[in-house]
Length: 178
Image 1 (spheres, rainbow, N blue to C red):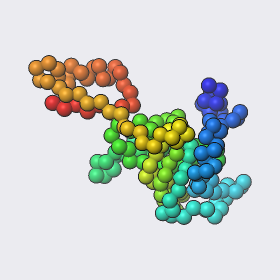
Image 2 (cartoon, rainbow, N blue to C red; image 1 turned 45 degrees about the vertical axis):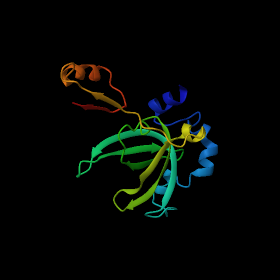
Image 3 (spheres, rainbow, N blue to C red; image 1 turned 90 degrees about the vertical axis):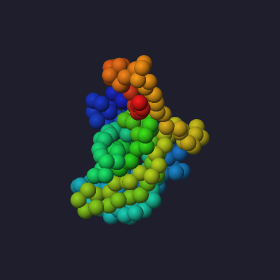
Image 4 (cartoon, rainbow, N blue to C red; image 1 turned 60 degrees about the vertical axis):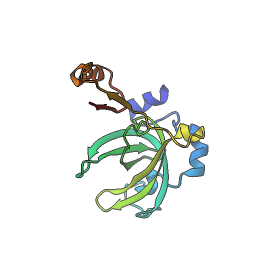
């Protein structure tokens, strides 16, 4: 696909934006852009933000990077880099088991709260994330995908199943219970 090639080679889109097909949704629902979070002028100097710390916002873009982390309490967390037509925003997201939405290259709509700090600028703590395709098609609740395997000691063990799971990696978490 031409747009993906442009982004891979040049680091930006030249001939258009993959968000163009969602322009109607974005214009009606989005109230925050990457520029609003971290505004700069042509010289790179900071300008006044249009959003404030703690403000509820709706943001849309394409996930270009995902970093998985664990909190001090052991809770799964990820930092998403989400690109809109103005630049990039950092989204802090706590995924639920079976989450298949927060995946690189997905076009998403994010509802959350702005967090502004002197050292990191503005980012969004995500309360809800949806595929823009789902919003476009009227799908309101996506059921998380997951796979549960119940092992019977007499038939299978984890060592029997582990090579199969390693060979067929995917985005869906697998839970194994003995």
